[in-house]
Length: 228
Image (tube, rainbow, N blue to C red; front, side, top):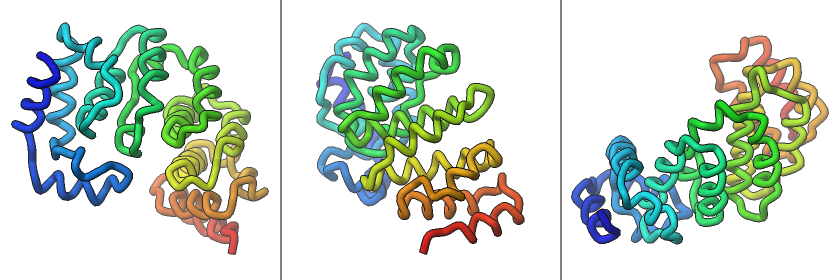
């Protein structure tokens, strides 16, 4: 496969109604760059590309012209089994990520085996000047460091990285809502002490009270902590 054949393949999978839906859902991406290919189709194509001779050429061909190419890129990186190679491709790709969907759907499986090696990478991502790199770093902390590898340092890292950028604030709120569900006693003080900015703080509480993983009593108390 080459770039021309890939574009033809993507257009052969086009769903125009889905394209129109996506253009509303992902406002940071130009509508002209969205073909309209559903995620299961993209994941299947990513697995095909991952095993092809075209893979490395495709991963080096940045920036891409289509949203779906960025999605394929994210899905291929998620399949890489070598940690160092995965990080190298991630660091090359993250500056070109321009939307929440590509950012959030990129989840390398190899990270589960190398969590301790991830921490310096997360620190680097959290203090990037690029919105979606920061968002990705927060997402990694949420996915991999709220269970047995949790440390009180991690919520503080999210607080320090948080900003008034909408897509960063939303991910930070999601992080704290998930952290409250998983580690309520550890994370509650950050909410009680209002360590986040007002918008992120209130978003975190709203997301938390919408969760089925918190008790009614916990939700009632969290609502009293909203900043007016």
